[in-house]
Image (cartoon, rainbow, N blue to C red; front, top):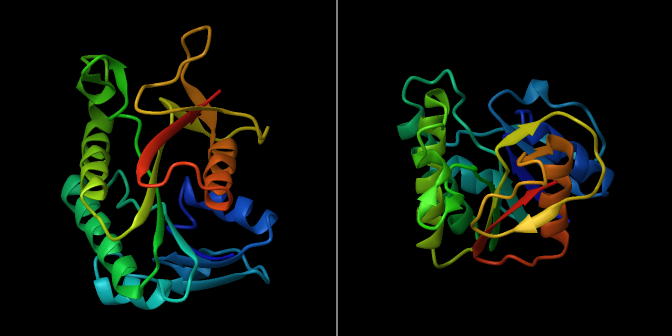
Length: 213
């Protein structure tokens, strides 16, 4: 496929880029600093302004799908506002470009840990993660109201960090997945596997799903 990955050099975006390359896709790596994108014959790197609809539309036009790993970064003092501004602009740009399919890297905070109780609303949830988690939850609400797009939102488990690519994972819906010991985790590499599996074999059109070991 011809795909665009927004944020292709970030913590989540870089493994997505590597996985997409390994599967033979042709990728437009859309980032703030194109010089940071590793050179590869399947990859074209370009600068994108995630807060400008015309910039997004121009860079994703002609692609079969867009994967958004956009994030303003934890150091942004206005992370919540900028996160949602970027999400709204990316959605509008993808629609404007006529690309029907958008897959979005989501957050774990909106997953339920008990009936009606989401992870981000529990007392144990780390305060430093709350702005991102709350913004990611709102992004899911925005997608659910965005009728023109065939969208998918992939929530990670509680722990998402570099590790091994096993190709194995479990799939869930709106509830946090944990293993027999109570851990909720997946490697960045296997999160990327799950995202590219969904790209190639869509099973979660216009909905959110989650993965974990």
